Image 1: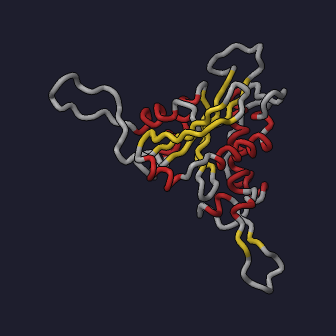
Image 2: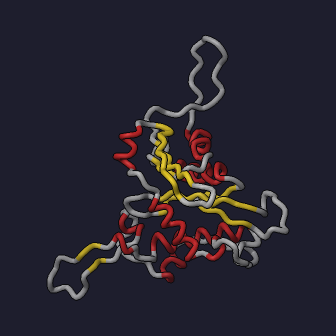
Image 3: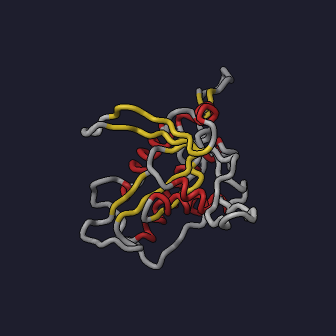
Length: 238
């Protein structure tokens, strides 16, 4: 998870102030599956899961591993949770419940007063802890590295600079463009394949996250991206 902050003199409102950016990353392909923006982590994550649910691939959330920030479980319940049927005894249920098949693991970092890492606690929010660790591992390194990548690509997400977005619309547009470039245009070094043909002039086959996920069969050019993908076009620019 990453967040950006508007200029301090601007008051908090639905269109200004501090915003959280939530990203859903597929660990196998490094594909950025969905992004969400909100005034807090729960709102941003809820937008992510609403986008994912709109794709129609599943009736529930995918297996997840996140850091220790709270609110993601509330976002999942808001999007996928169902209120249990009334059994006829006691008060009728009103709150949505998690499905027994949901799997969600948190990696909570404990730090001292100087911010130095002291220990890591693994918490099974939904599912069996041992099964979750075997499936998802014990690290959020992929998404943390992706946060670094997005700050290098997108100056609007760099902390303590003057590059913050002046309008939330353009902030969203910048994230859309960055994700499209990341998924389709930029080859990912960890995804490359070694060429087995000894006569080949190249040692590696470069691949993008979209290629690894089976969404395309080639590395896109910027021209192809601009002419094939529909990008929001606001009336003015910033």
